[in-house]
Figure 1 (spheres, rainbow, N blue to C red):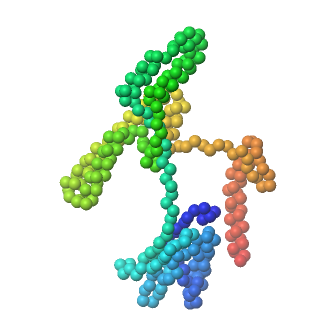
Figure 2: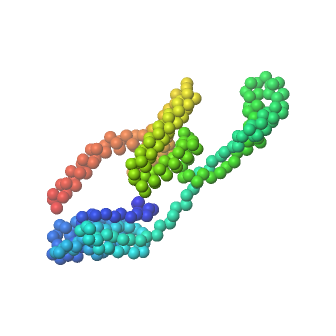
Figure 3: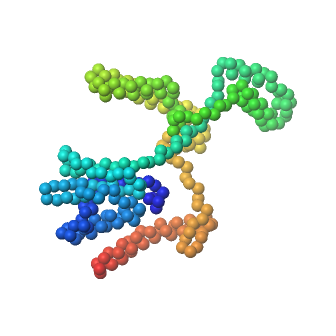
Length: 297
């Protein structure tokens, strides 16, 4: 199924001579292995790109290196290479560059002028509906609505697309980003001119930057846990975010059980319970039956 939807390139030194089926004097077991190997790729829609020997000695010529793919290759050549007993395989393929969807982000201008404008608008809010209302919830909702309106007018949100494919970590500040760029420049200098002085400069800068990033990360999560104090649910959400644990997928609405479609939750649970309770025994029985069949043949 994978080969139907994905573009695949499978390459390497397989140590299986694909010329074996065409060699009349080849041992029968090697020929059978090569046929089986090729058939496994052909069944997925992948074809071997190379069809000439990739390893040649004084007495033998074998095709043990190859490239299997379901793509249309422009070319596939074998380059004679004397530093190894295996030749090189050169192939050219055209791939469509995937379109990168840059994530959108919203930002607000919070300079002194915007804050002053917000302060003036809040001073001009009609507070009577809030102060005269005896219902605390209604009064609070009115104030929040008026505050949000004033905030949007004074500090409007602007949507922009980030050039980064992934959002920057919240503890990575602009200053840290600049430091990372400097570290990369020092690394480039170290590679181009690996003097002891350049190595030491890069090492010290990298170590100090690592300490700064770790401290910023620790400070970020310390603040998050302080804000979530008293709320176990929020604390666990933070922990799951740290360890990368994702939310569980929703319970299936239905499941096929033979000819029957099971849609009620207890029935679905029973189907899974029976499957996992018997899968071990069933696997052993199938394995024994397969072994007995091979022995009879």
